[in-house]
Every structure is written in C-alpha cells, then in structure tokens.
Length: 123
Image (tube, rainbow, N blue to C red; front, side, top):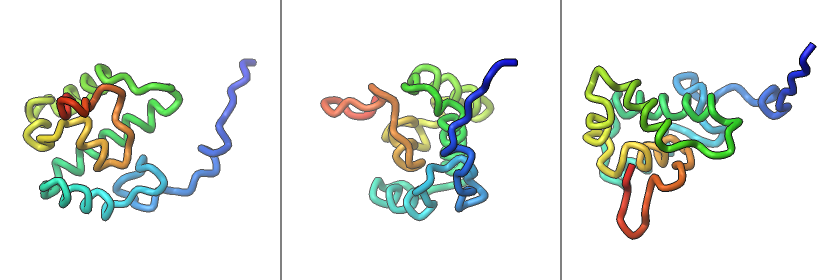
C-alpha cells in the first residue's frame, strides 16, 4: 500500500469565511478586493468575481507546486473564459493585466514575470 502524506494545515483549515469563495486565501475578504478595485479604478461586476473565483480555484488546486507557471495559468484562464473571448476578454475586465491585477484582487501572489516594474503589467 502506498503511503500518502497529508498536510495537517490543510486538514484543520477553517472553512471559508465566504461560501461564495471556497478557495479564497485565509485572510482574504470581498471587502479587500473591493477596496483594491476602487483604488485601481475598477467597478467589480459578476464577471470580475467569476475571474477571482477561477484564480483562487486554480491556485488551490496547484498549491503543492513551488512555482505557479504563468503560461499554464494563462492557458487555464483562456480556456475557462473561451466562450466570452478568452484572454482578450479578460484584458477588457482587467486593464492592469488579467493575471497581475486579478491576482491582487484575489489575494494571491502573481506568478513571476506577470509584472515588470520597468514596463508595467505584461499578463
């Protein structure tokens, strides 16, 4: 029988504070996202919240990886929102970059190279 280890922190984790966001980081709230959005000149719609949920879900299912792969995340979001226009559509929602800006709103750390301080958001 193969031994499967379990992270005790995952097993005893408190249930999500917001049932609409079951994979949200522990200290994240909708109010945090709304505050950041306001500071960045965004008015959050249901499509923004759907993107935040998708990102939090992706990160939750890839949390054992040491590095989130930007290309794989791009592909996952492009596929998830394909019916609405994929990444092109997400750029209309998040002009600061569909990965960089939405990760800030979702309480997640954007993958390496998602932003370039000398150039701005690239993803």
